Length: 178
Image 1 (cartoon, rainbow, N blue to C red):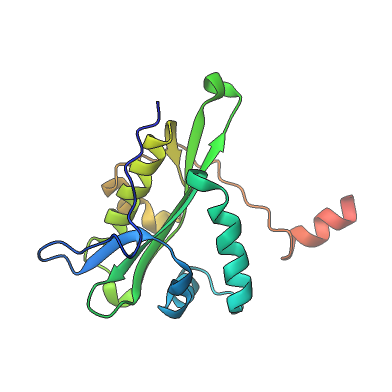
Image 2 (cartoon, helix red, strand yellow):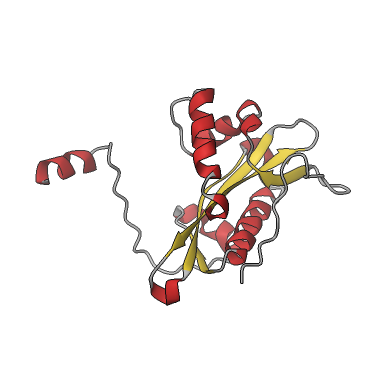
């Protein structure tokens, strides 16, 4: 039933003729190749220790194909220029269907406009389809809807809500009312 297209590791990924970037699975060594700096362009956060990075990497690896993080590695420099993730949600509805959730798509500011984001998203969508997902969804800011439309996504509705556990006002509202 599942028709997954294998995603190469760094050792397997080879940039083709004229390709300056390799799309591959994230690896432990990527912490030294600018992976976390890249993610900070998407959402600034405190630095991770190598131990914390390794622990999260191993936790996600244990999920197998239900959680995939891809990177685009610059073939010349080895730096990570783009990244994205897809999580597979297993549901009871739709005959125990699966839904892919695309998250954390980011392209380094210096590498934008080269199609890296589209290549990463396309591979994430292919992976979700190969895992048997009946749809792939994501949330994005209004200024990114054009980008995701180029990737084949259509805007469904504006029913996007957010609840953050550690920021105002949500934190205080939740604690006060519970």
